[in-house]
Image 1 (cartoon, rainbow, N blue to C red):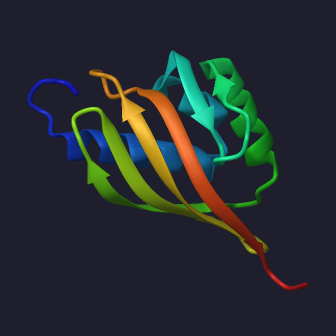
Image 2 (image 1 turned 180 degrees about the horizontal axis):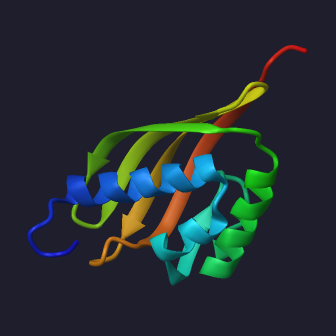
Length: 124
C-alpha cells in the first residue's frame, strides 16, 4: 500500500471503485483496478482466470446480465496486502450475495480476486 495510507483506506477505495464499475456496467473502469497479470476466481469451483483481459471479459459478460444493478459492500478486514469484504449486487429480479478476498499490490491494484457467492432470483 502507498506510504501514508492505511490498508483499510486503500481497500475501501478499491472496493468503492469496483462497486461503481458494477453499477455503471463500466468494464473500462475496472481495468485500472487490476494489474496486467492478475488472477480471478469467480467461485471456489470455477476455473481460475489469468490476466486483466480475461477478468474484464468475464465482467463484460456478467454486466450484460444485469439491469440497473445496485452494489453494496462491507469491509470485514484489511491487512497490508489484502482485503476481505461481504458484497451484494441486486436488481429487480435477482441478487448475488457473497464474500471476496482481494490481494492488493503496493499501488492498491488487485493481483488476485477470489469470490464465493450465491445467486437468488425473485419469483415471477
